[in-house]
Image: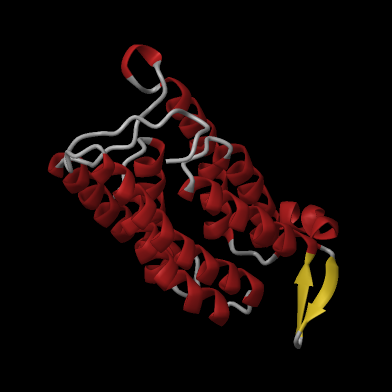
Length: 222
């Protein structure tokens, strides 16, 4: 990992100064693609996936250069899940049709909660052993982020609630890690997540059946 971080250092070269902090190319591009990706998700556009994959790639470079290996590993998982979600939104519906926005059943939510709790416990133990600066919070945000991405891939409205929880934790965490622009990104993400939750709720109410799914064509706004 350390060797890879050294190789990626030129890609993370300093671009400009924000206040008293130097901001890298990777962090700037992560800011731009992150904001664009979340907004495209708010609009339920399938293009959020390729933009999100690019966002994860930029943050992978950033976190490796900063030697934040747990965060780096999470970006690799996001890239894989991004390709999976891209396919699901296109072909995950009935007869391989476009997936629709829907609410999650209690079994799905309970399963996500149990797996997130188990993952948080296991990752906390692992990260503590490698002297992570915030093992529990890094583990919790990683586990809940994966649950949120899974729900997003399934086009379930509850993904927004999970992302909101993650963003509330990430903002102070990245401030402590001196990734100030990234913290600003996650503040922006938080606002967009609230907008996304509102927009998807309106879409579900528009069908007149709160617990039913409403068809949203892939690539079109909700």
